[in-house]
Image (cartoon, rainbow, N blue to C red):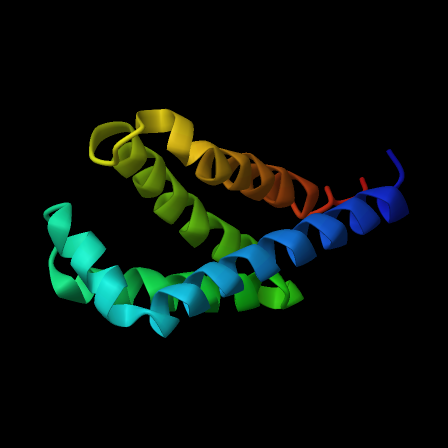
Length: 122
């Protein structure tokens, strides 16, 4: 795969994932009482809802800023692993309801792979 193809694919995935995370975080903030209620209903403290919503928005923005792409993707991978675990253990419908989180997790790993530093020429 050429460098320009890798770059194009990475930007498309970064854009899609970035928008998905920003939208998810903003939606959590837009209905904060319901978000907090959902988190506390699953046994998490209320502040955790704020943390996750903020991390999703900032992580989504970070995916769109080249300097922060890999760091943002790594942080969002942690969140997606947690989301998958929550869907598998606490959400009615189980892991089937976590398919979007699984999809985003795969995309984040692809972004990290595509944005790995190029090896130094010998």
